[in-house]
Image (cartoon, rainbow, N blue to C red):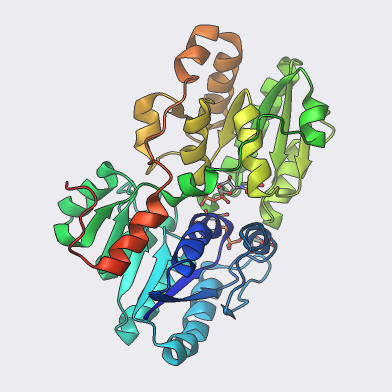
Length: 372
Ligand code: UD1
Ligand code: UDP
């Protein structure tokens, strides 16, 4: 039996890795071991519960207002013992978080092969997103298997000199996770609150946006809501206390927005599918919303997910108050502009990414699922 360890620690990694855990566990040829770093706590546990995944190891590193130094040093010191005890034949990490980077680094120190799920996303601006662009490039140097979600991501790796036979285009595992979430007759108290108004779905958390940019983002949204009583906004807020404080300050006494606790991924997908439009700085939501044909204003300076922008469903609006205000207002007031963005597309695969990754791990490098 091949010993495979999956390591993840934040909400989006869990959403995209749990379906893979379950696929690997369904195959007798693997001994599947799950180690969570606990970089997130409540938001991670919520996802583990949803997918019925029980970790074999939990490093429990999270502390409130943790810095990059805290996360990096805690994970590095704690994961060593787990890797030395288990000695997996391969370790799978996901995407671009600190958990991902530090785990790959520890594997490199112990010379354990790394498989990178969601490999090859790039902005080539090392400070945007911060520190994720560095994290994913660094993991790309170390990884032996590169599971790229799209051809574009695979081409980035090839341009960087990665060997073609280490790259597999699989689609994104988030599409696997989305297969059974959206329900026709879905209901939720917040959806009932919105009733026949336009649902504006909001999320925001990026580290590089904390402080002045995030205040500006929230002020822009507030100004548009004040001018548009036909809208009601729902914002499941990140657990980060710095984000919460900014939202409390900027949305104080605004009756048109409900700021709620993080919702389960099942609810999140149903909210996305029902919203009129979405404002976000999230990575994962940029992948999900295009499937539902819901316009997304991406409140970031760069995106590593240009597929949705090219398709027309995503618009990169930056982080300035003025730009977010103008773009949000335009989509509410100009039907033609709205209609141009409101159509479904799905550049991220067919929902079989986990099966493809598991096949590569089971049958070896000889399988090229899609030649580049
Ligand atoms: C992390 C990732 C980011 C990813 C995001 C997904 C890094 C450097 N950043 O950023 O790439 O997009 O997760 O959400 O890896 N907190 C809780 N409970 C939780 C989770 C967070 O209380 O379950 C609070 C803590 O006070 C913590 C803060 O949120 O200090 C920020 O969490 P952290 O993991 O450091 O950064 P994120 O912004 O979540
Ligand atoms: N999500 C969720 N509940 C929420 C907000 C988001 O389940 O309250 C899901 C969302 O559907 C997506 C993922 O979390 O799959 C995105 O996570 P996040 O924005 O925290 O991180 P990023 O994708 O930016 O790394």
